[in-house]
Image (cartoon, rainbow, N blue to C red; front, side, top):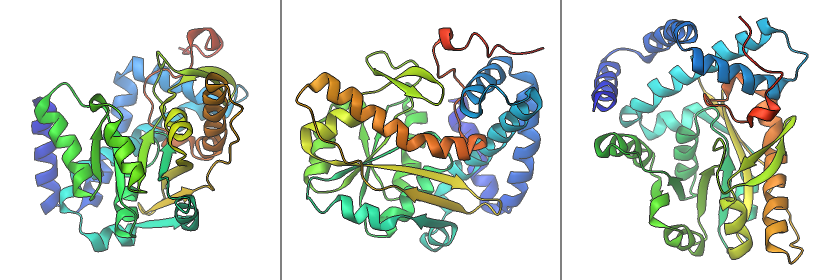
Length: 296
């Protein structure tokens, strides 16, 4: 309830005030959060150490960690203010690289699966995709609080996306693919219980099997995507070519191999824009983090 009220108030305030004031405030808040949130700071440092490599200095890691918090605070501000954003502003703020790859992946008529990480600002990018003529169906995990869940999901609907709750099963997902539309899946779930082991950056971790499983069962093409904030607070969204994958006939091996291909495709974006990766839980298992403990 508190988060719901806070988000509603912030959204109302910045319908009146220019959002640049909010960005300035986000800079201050991010530095405070870095100082007073030891658990999040520790996980940020560990995750970034895997992403940029063990040779990076503590000063560089902390610079990136503060940058990630700053960009995330900006993202939260943008997110709660989405109802005030007009289609013209969405089109103005979002540029694409690889739009033709979106169209090409749908030529087979089996739909497509956009896969990405918690990076940048994918909701406004999704809105721009819909305005460009491609319907999107975003797969989400419902939040425990009904009011907060409605607040969060309504922002995605404001960007003209259809919301498909993960708890409702795969029926809605398959229906979207049968309409030759795109599903959107952010697949970086820390310690995915029933996931498959893949190598990401410098170590092995578990990632959800859902995107690969859906693709193999339906024939939907997987298109890796990333959306990043530019210095002027506009956004650049990348769409790679769809992943070309030949099944071997072994379902378990194919799911793992295709999931690995997905992570291979997304890794360059997280390495290029590490300060825009919003993951405040430890992504890699403890055994791979022995050399990444927080320094005093």
